[in-house]
Image (cartoon, rainbow, N blue to C red):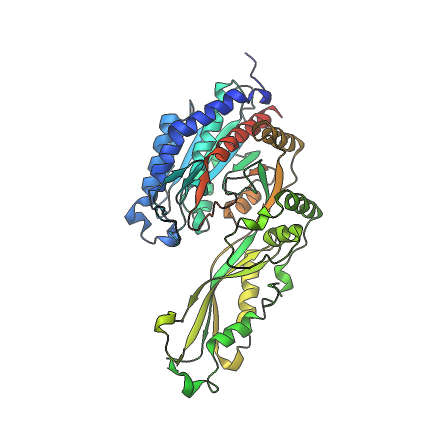
Length: 479
């Protein structure tokens, strides 16, 4: 019997997917949200606490009850490393037996964060209409459910798909430092995928399919300036002892223009490809003011540029520095008239997709520590880094599949947009499988607030995205 083609992925498949989400996925996600399975960087006793193991077992249990016929599923755990959920699903229909698709996600979470609305919290699942609040549902607990449901929808409609491999890790929010070991350990079973699907990215709105074209890299670490061994009376010392805060400002001015925010080190910039500029112009026009209105602005604060194309490029292809923590300063209510001995700040430097993170970290450290003012002790200790990623050219079959999928299930054309965050796994996979095509997408849209308070998953959007994944898998098999 001849298999059905991609056009068969329509209303029936969409209905099955929606019912599966309502019947089993959402209730299981609610249980998952309740597990405080923080990534290892935020839970040093993760193995003893057992939350990551509990989340992995929950997802594994759902997959065994609702998985695809012939699926081989297991939790793989190398000594001392966070476990991964690994599944192999044989090809179906007329797809080539030696072809493969790799579908990726993660189940570890960011820490709690303050500021949740009353009645909500990181480990409290709350359903309000199409929104499911709680940490991890959208980033990235839904990925296993969406991947397996998309594959099952194809089989129900008699539509071919290639051999599929699922890899759901537990270390992504810590920089995926465990993942290379698993990729190497499982390399023979993974094979050489011709398509990689990653569901850990974002969407510009909830009206159409968004494809991630690039990811910024990052360098993080602590900058510390020390001037004294202990604090002294500010009236006695100021004017004689330099302020550690002022020295900190001075060395930071070597890196960042304090007026514009521009990074001054040319080696941390990269040429922006013409195609990415054109895509930024299109996505900026589609999003318009929603590009910045989605943020919880304070008072009369305005965006850094009035041109949406420039804002998109700022967010995706230009380096920018954020100060995410501070040390050496007492709380306001307990601050006395003391010239403090030191000041420290945690830096998060986002890099263009094609800038090498290790080289950037070296330049940053050398620039900050060189010739310390007044002979003060200035140190920069790097904590983590990740290379960015720039997608390869989209193959004609994939471009057609994405357009068809978006029109079929959202009623609007697909749109391309770079993301400002990092997914370390993508750079690794890009190097490991240079001939593969990539579908990087996700559900983190306006106000979804990943990593922050009131994070939510848009269930209606996720249902349609699941159907889009099924459609792309069908096009892949038929190409």
